[in-house]
Image 1: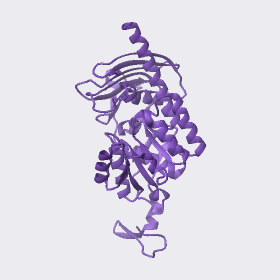
Image 2 (image 1 turned 60 degrees about the vertical axis):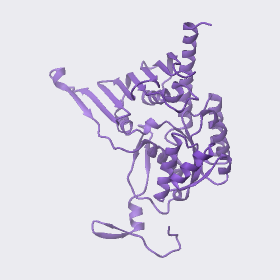
Image 3 (image 1 turned 180 degrees about the horizontal axis):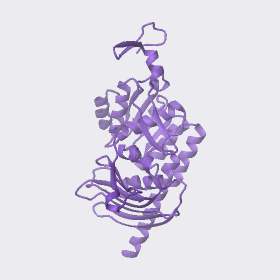
Image 4 (image 1 turned 90 degrees about the horizontal axis):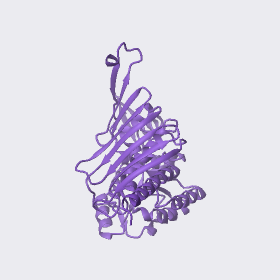
Length: 376
């Protein structure tokens, strides 16, 4: 790394010509643009500005289990690219922390409080019941937080996290990863007024996240997505849901019907006891039928040409062109960019609270149904 006092000039060769680095930096800068009008994220391929404040941002990951280790990998890659400083990882299991630290060439600790005086931004990828305590401790010190979904265990905990972030001014972003799936990113600008959703999210039984049920574990992805697509200002008017525990002592399979005040309806099935992996959303909106496959990163829009002489002759299928970016990488870059630009994160804590509230509503209906079907 070359500091501002050194006289050496870094140069880049483009189209056979040499340019000083400061010229290139003026032309291109690393950026993640978030368009609130459409609420979608576009990742820009650019050259990192060597004078950017984010380059020296000290970061860490707390919790490096099945998902947290991928957070660590992405932070480590960003550090190797000279975009941030990756201080290290933390996990209650010291052996796990040591293993990930060796893989990513960083330090490790087993007590997250040791990071309170050494970092400026963290990813919290720990069990849900620990989110509030850990996040609030960092937020109180003005340290920016990216917390995995669900934001918290209860709405009261979520409210405390929001209040703490607002008081300190630190950024608090929630990791609803599917918003950064390339298929969703390219589809979002084409969404007009969705009227009916049919959603399936099925996977084989996992060896993780057994501290929560299938609703808070995976259905919450789709609960967040439908509220985002229908409109965050459109209230939910009714919830109907059923669910059963099959292998664990928590709900392993569930179905929910969500009705909105504007007439939109979503039918969502989530299961973690399937034989294959399915992450598909289909929905109808005015004059078009949309297919979104998160697993294969596929999105298409089927519509009817307005001037078609016959419906069968006017049907067109538009398979959207996907820019294949790792969703987690895009999520982390969006979080870091919100710090650099001092802008609202693309997925706010209130977005996370809204998804949690709907998920808890689904669980309440599941509990009511279970008591009727299996009376004590």
